[in-house]
Amino acid sequence: MSAPEYADEAICPLLQHESGRFRLQISAAGKTAAARAAAELVPEALVPLADTVLQEPETGAQLPWDFSVVFCSNAFMQDLNRRFRNIDAPTDVLSFALGGEVQEEDGRIFFSAGEIVISLDQLAYNAAEFGVTENEELKRLVIHGMLHLSGKDHADNSPGQEMLLLQERILKRLDQLIVRKT
Image (cartoon, rainbow, N blue to C red; front, side, top):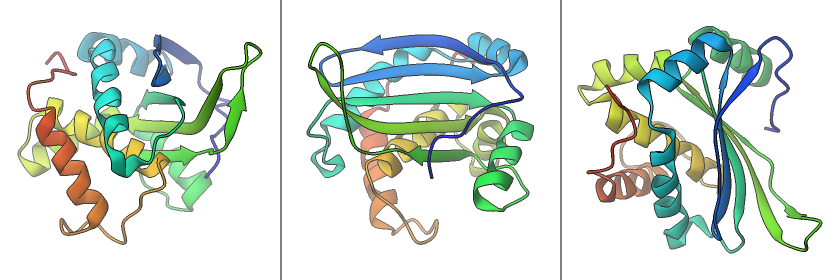
């Protein structure tokens, strides 16, 4: 899927980061999601999380990545899911892979990975449903989205899927990382 256009919601930037390994923009769709993300999340903690994922040889990251993470509500996510997957229900995470190389004016080359969209509402629901902390579930969703952007996929959500096993291995390495305040 290509990255969506957000006609009805203002995108509120939360953090921009650039290192030798990646360029990351973190935003929220709409004022309510932005206020909630600012109150609940530690956006700068997603930097070491992204770095850990991109160090994983199985992601195949040879060029520095350029990607974004957008936090949103269930209503926003349901609209995206309806428009791009013909599913009229919210979901926890959607990944919009772009792919391809982008050369900057200064000659630097990035892999244009795409965009990850995460529903804060669904994140909270998942955490309660699966008996994990919202901190753990947020890390899981970002890792999941990044693995999809790297080209990984899974046939279903059974825990034996290769991508999901990789996701959980990466998650264990990030056990002490706090990405969510509450």
